[in-house]
Length: 368
Image (cartoon, rainbow, N blue to C red; front, side):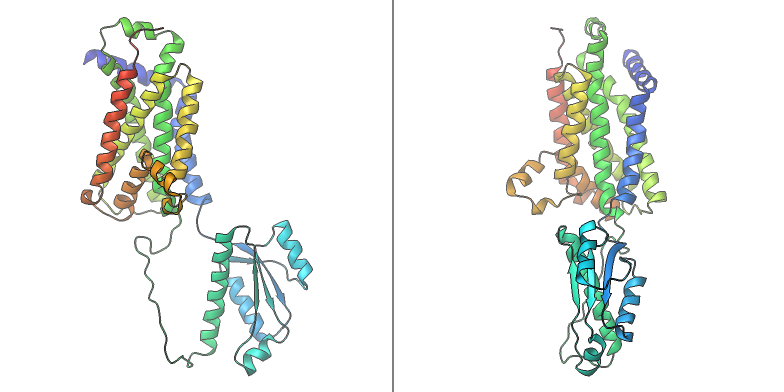
């Protein structure tokens, strides 16, 4: 144990002595959590809209005022013709436009029905659909207030309830994925250079001639990053709760236990990469780029896995972050217990054992 503790202490010295490592370890997670929590959101707000009011009556003005007071739209200066609208679409200052016909108020008053044109920039089809739905909802609410006593013979009134996110906080969708992304990149990347660093510095010979067993070398390499990753996790939780106003609904103890398991999986993968590479640059490139892209694509927090072709859905099953993302969502956001996440936990445990076994097999006790 004295040898192990001495080796662990040496690894801590390596980490604290390298400012770049500290920046990756603590700076990158904070930047990512802030960016994903505030800058990246699935919500659509403050979208530029141009309005061509050919009617200039009280009805059109009331609708325009409703759009102005909505947080979804930012009404630009009025336009007078189609050419001006088209130019604004081209320069990107607006994403949608609303055109009132000249007889809008009269048609609405006399015939009970009036036409209105909505134009949306469908280069981003999802945003275009959301914007047209927002505008349709504003118009429908206005019509209902104009005719509160007129109801159709049959009607269906939906009662909406947003489970697990009643306030529709966009950060809730990203935070579990960001936690998985941070662990996968930071823990894997830093561990991946640990063994390679010994090779490049020429200190691997000392380790190989020492009575220290290979398994103890790997454990001593992993423990400091496990401790530092847990500190990172605490910082992320504090930022999520106090900065992003996210409530942790499930068991904090279960969340920590699952996080430790996932960190061990990432460390095992990092040790494997470190054992099969010969330079820190190669190890860092494989761990950073090789882990970041699969985590972004196949975890499910950026793109729904169900929408992918079946071959990519199959590939996603070998990405560890997919299972951890599901666990964090279930425990942190839904308040579920271990009985709902035991399958994902078992998969992560199996991956950890497999990766650590392969890393140990690949650990070369002789230098070439």
